Length: 153
Length: 245
Image (cartoon, rainbow over all chains, first blue to last red; front, side, top):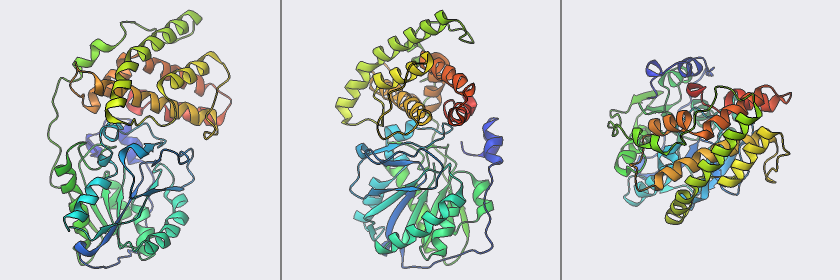
């Protein structure tokens, strides 16, 4: 369970004491109904294409995952040992639901699936990810994305 | 995760997210978030359950149709109880060797590495069969024999042979350890005498019953005693989970 109060020590304190940023503003961007939106996934699971460079440090960098990717194309090099990886090893959709997203596009629940999706290594300091995230915004707009689904691990 | 949402939304890109730690999301206040009561590593809840995953996905995406925010909504379903007892069925796979609590004697280390090699060899055929059947593996950089060799070489103080795209011994040890665990799990997945274990049962077996876990704990101790800062960090945080240390 990912309920802090149900976790065992020392994991509970480790997570409870992680610093979280706060912001003075609450940006909110409106858009068309879900059925018309173009959706991209951004994962923080440290996944990437098999031949792409692994996540070796905490630099806040990202990797690109094209929409044609399948389970066999992706590997995970997240730093942490403190989360389950057997789910991903059985079925990538439990971490990176690209197959599910394709189904939602096929049945009209969403407008379309973006051409490119992205992955960070979530143990990095969020401040280290800021520049990359702001640059990603331009790439997402270029891909006509108007709905980003962020998926942690 | 919430910070990424804030940065993107501030740049004009609408976001929604899944939240695994509600307390973190309450602090960061991203524009749209769906908290799910699942364990870390499984944000969509259950592997090989497309209908369940689809409900989670749609619940997160439906937040786009709300008029204003920030919003933090709880997903109403928990995962069903998984079959109990699967962990017991794994125990007979472990090598029947009792290892000492520390490996100070050379003979103890040799006995451990011998048991480790035997364990890897026995699991290898099931891994290979699974690989043939699925057509892929989540093993990323170190095939089983290569992972075993790198980890054994480090323990023995031998020079390490690093793949060209991995820059440091610390990173190589971490990737080899993760690949070794993936290899063990995929071997278990393929065996005809086992039901697929829960992650909790698999982790219990791996960390409490296998020679491999003793190898990783010995590497952890060796890293912690190193002069190399990266190795000390790897030994301290990145080889053995906090709940198995």
